[in-house]
Length: 271
Image 1 (cartoon, one colour):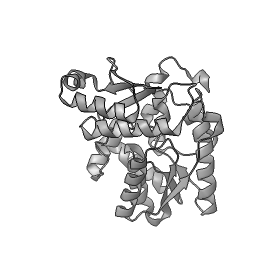
Image 2 (tube, helix red, strand yellow):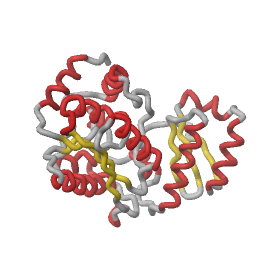
Image 3 (spheres, helix red, strand yellow):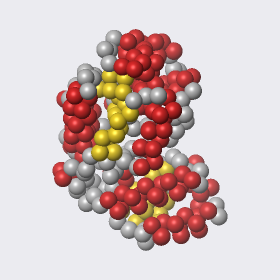
Image 4 (cartoon, rainbow, N blue to C red):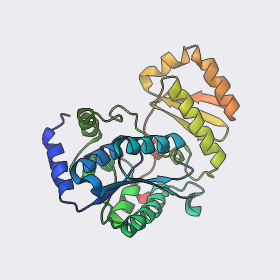
């Protein structure tokens, strides 16, 4: 699909109609592009908010803070505990989580005089299981990428044009997506997953997931890299590191990496 330069002009015009804005900023590909674009149009009338929970990796928070500091953007970190309602990872977890976190974020924004809260949902998100979108709509959170038909491919293209450090950054999602649904959420397991995935990334496998099934690690890699990985001498080190982290069994998913692999049998009826 070809990226249309006009989409960026539409986005800038859309942002230019706003009086001010808070951007829900994770430091990922989409939210960085939204923040950079809003900053370009609104200047000092934009601020970044990052919500820190036990299921958001520390390195994402660090990268978000570093980006804002480097670019002189006001940045607030809001701490939030795990909601009791999602402690067993229900199928509507994303809805419950976003409803709570964005309610907190919106309240904080209003107290500081910001009328608009923006998030990084893009046009591709409507084609996947995304119950959190319903929560955003209920709270009247605006999604400039989604509303202007901007896809992930567009975001990466425009990010390269803007020289953003996230242009080629692998997509990421919260650590709860590494757990099966209706599975008890434990902070030590979330920490284990984060360390396991960061270890794989340090070996050059940034586009990967470690799906956590108790003491079993199910590693998802890009399909065309599975054979390379299995035959590589680094496997011994991976096994040793994963055992050290507490996994008894380490497996490779032959279906390869795919976003939301636990969502395969779910539908929007899970809201």
